[in-house]
Length: 195
Image 1 (cartoon, helix red, strand yellow):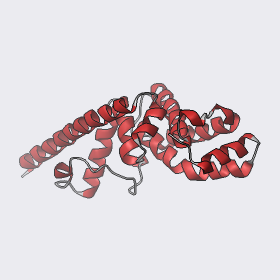
Image 2: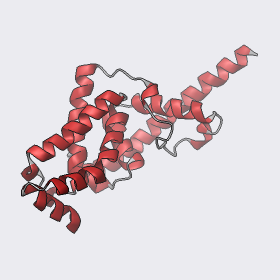
Image 3: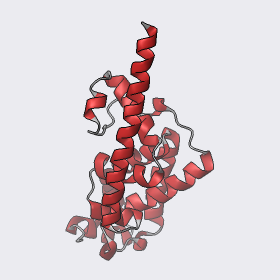
Image 4: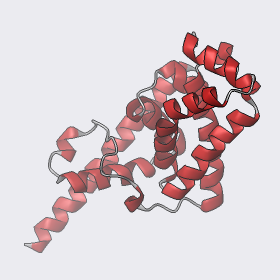
């Protein structure tokens, strides 16, 4: 995987202490890192802390990024992943669906199930189902489906082969679809008893 020339240049400038280079990197990657952390932790405050720590780590140790190992975004997602895992272990994953913005990207999975629900119900069900997935599957869905990074970049961020990413993504999609189908059947059964 080749690192874009712009990223190599920015990292080179950052290593020489350029504040402008840091700001360029921050502006280019902050939103994606925040969304990843939010989807992984389910908590806006934790996601903000994780995002801040990712960029503080880059600022403190710009030489720790090795272009030969992958892209800058993959490197930043890797740091975010480790920080989000620690935060989740420490906070016992308090999930507040109010922490998500309505504009958040949703997955295009289990469309038949989601089309039977209102938009707000579908987003809520999707968020709950996503947070209910085991971490290895949740993180690849967030990276590959929501953040739309390549399998190779996701593999670099997670520290596993690209084939493992593909396998986890396939299994994660299946688990997510089952969770959404259960939600739909519970909702439908509940409606039948209400009438």
